[in-house]
Length: 139
Image (cartoon, rainbow, N blue to C red; front, top):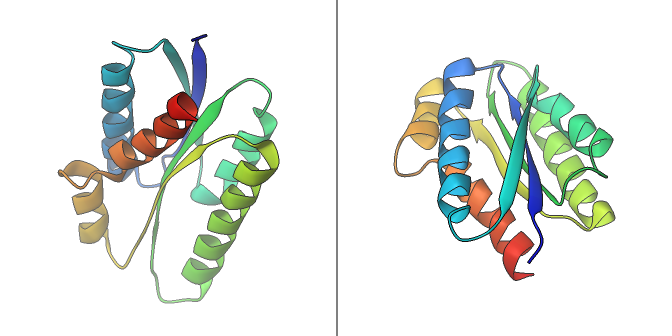
């Protein structure tokens, strides 16, 4: 099997949450790399809204992608707009590019929920890396 290249795109808007998600994804990739030849790079995005753009501009350089970020509900409709549009665009990209995109963008009611999902056994960075690599390696 030839080397697989993965791009992790991570929004560091909530830096502590991003670091936990990224650590989880990297740990999983490094574990899988003991058996399979996987190379990965990281690109940072100022917010989750910009993640699809970075995936699209790097579409020809990688075999798969992992999208990591966090959107926390505020007092306005902004949360719904960003959450819905980012999710839709990432799904559209995965289908149009015919490449897996592990979805690790948290949509939480508050920062406590985000911390739980980025640092504990429920780390969504790990889950999104697993999803991407499972499809990438198993087809």
